[in-house]
Image (cartoon, rainbow, N blue to C red):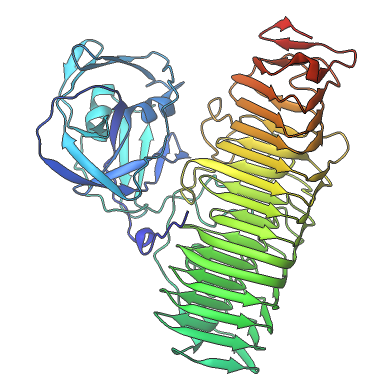
Amino acid sequence: MKKNTKRLACMAAALCLLFTYACSGSLAADNKSVEAKKSASSVYINKTAVTLPAYNIEGYNYVKLRDIAMMLNGTEKQFEIKYDSDSNAIYIKTKTAYTADGSELEASGASSGAAAKASSAAVYVDDREVKLTAYNIDGNNYFKLRDIASALDFSVAYDSSTGAVSIDTSTGYTPEGEPLARNGAGKAPPQGGGPGGAPGGAPGSAAEENTGTGAYNLSDGEKLNGGTYTSTNADENAIRAEGKISASLVGVEIKKTSGAASSSEASSFYGLNSAVLALDGATLNITGGTVTASAEGANGVFAYDGATINIADTAINVTGGNAGGIEVAGGGVINAKNLTVNSTVKAAIRSDRGGGTLTVDGGTYTTSGSSGAPAIYSTAEITVSNAALTANDSEAVVVEGLNSVVLNNCTVTGNMSGVYGSSSSENIHNVLLYQSMSGDAEIGTSSFTMNGGTLTSKNGDMFYVTNTNSVITLSGVQLNPANGTKLLVVAGNSNSRGWGVSGKNGGTCKFNLSGQKAAGDITVDAISKLDMNISASSSFTGSINSDGTSAGSLSVTIDSASTWTLTADSYITEFNGSLSNVVANGHKLYVNGAAVK
């Protein structure tokens, strides 16, 4: 999926959030529709960054009531929601824990916008009717933040300098003028975030779009053969292709040796200070040559804003801070073949806000020197075939949010040497699928697919899923786990980095083994779900929740050609298939607490 967010992040979002209740049934409304545009919003609840799917209607942002109920659960202002379809009435009961129905925090299916109609659904707070401005979009009711805050008596503050909205449940509501909102994400104060190799910037932040200048600006139809092109100035690309042009480089030596980026966010989001930058729909073809980037914020090769870079047989060496090897953002496209990429601070293959498409065939991609430098960091669609991927001091692959990584016949190795920052509660892992809540990746299903090749973990569990829906599919992969580690962990996290709300940020995973041999234990915590499918002559050797933990749900499906060999007692909630394909090996299989094998 190509996600082009051209110029979106450069607009500071003065927010006035409105909340929704997701209900079915007809709602009383007039026939007049207004345009509702999808928007991103920087929101803090009790100083914790959250990301809420949102629409912008006539200059204001609107989000679902059930989403805010989920976020406030466990606080002084928690509330329960009931809907009476007969009377078309929504009942809110304060000081009562919210009961989730599974619809929370679901991103809209609309790619850019939808029609919104005014709604007159009745709303009662503790049996007292309140008048709230409401819109209906695709069967969901959306309400204004200050209306809800007033009715439930919690504080809402807006910081015009950062474009962030802060909700404080420990303070009562104070009326104040509402700032007009603009489409886009507001810049929020720095806190939380993702792994060190994650997209730059604070949760929900969006630096003003700044792509800088170019030491050498290519013109349409231009072809450079050989030669050395250098940049030593701040915020300057050594080579720049901008606008609707097509240009080529053959055997060119490119150096970005000094001159720091003035904004780490702009270097990550827009390619500011990169050695090579293509943007605004340009097409740049690169064959052979070298790219050296040693300045602060100097990524190697960067495609932004609908630009396409086709690059082959090139050596790229990146050693500057806050910089990675090859990168797409804002809907950029890179097609890479037989590259040699070395990066020391961020991922060798990476993407950032707005995503894009990155396709790699052949070559070697290596990171070292940083716990935040995976071989691949994806907030885009990334496919890598026939390549060697090595992270010497980090996990091998990270997928965030509604994005994907597909690996075909690759040799992949990770060595996560420690947790990020000072947290001792984080999981050590080799492949991470998660949602950071930073606003840099759409909320949705994270996907990791590997066909053939080898996947080696020198330290940490092979797969870790947290605060996201995910699909992991393995077929014909040689798995080499680290000693004493797990095959898969699906669990919540401490929220020390802003990854969802502690106690409610579990993972949901579909784990598909097809023609696959896998060994190792699996754990799924009480706020997480697993749907495991063992098919096409696969074999799984290991235990599932051997300590008896009752997961949110835990289903195993096995076909007649596959086997599961227990290494300890295992506890699941659903089994599909023939128990004759389960080898007890002296242990017991429990389904909903009853021993079945």
